[in-house]
Length: 142
Image 1: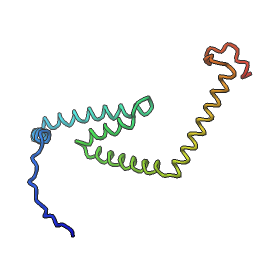
Image 2: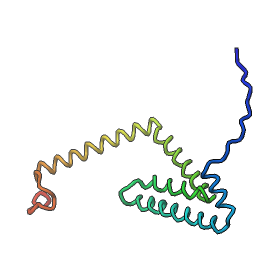
Image 3: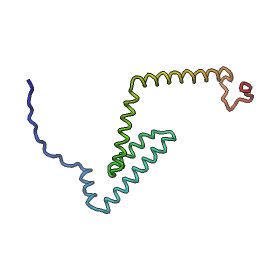
Image 4: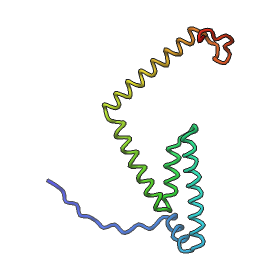
C-alpha cells in the first residue's frame, strides 16, 4: 500500500549573509563595478595560472576550471564556457570508462612499461650506474 504524503509548502529561505552583502553591493553602481573588476582580476589570474600550468608542471585543468568558476559568478560568458568545459569533461569521462578503450589503454601502458624497462636494463648493462653526461668514451654508439 502506497502512502500518500502531502506536499508541505516550505516558507522561502532567507538569503544568506553573502547574498545580502552581494545585493547591497549591486545597489551601488560604483561598488558593483569595483566588485566585478575584482572578481574579473582574481578569476583571470587563476585562469591564466591554469593555462600556464598546462605547459609547466601543475594541475592546469583544475586551475582553468576554478578560474572559470570564479568568473562565472559574475559573467554570463564564463558560465557558458564553464558549462561547455563540464560537458566536455563528462564526455571524456564516459569515453575513458569505455571497457574496450580501457583495455586498450591498459595494454598500451603495460607495453610501454616493458619497453622502458628494457631500455633502462640495456643502458645499465652497457654503462652501469654512470650517468649519461659522465660517459667519457661513448664507443657503444659509434
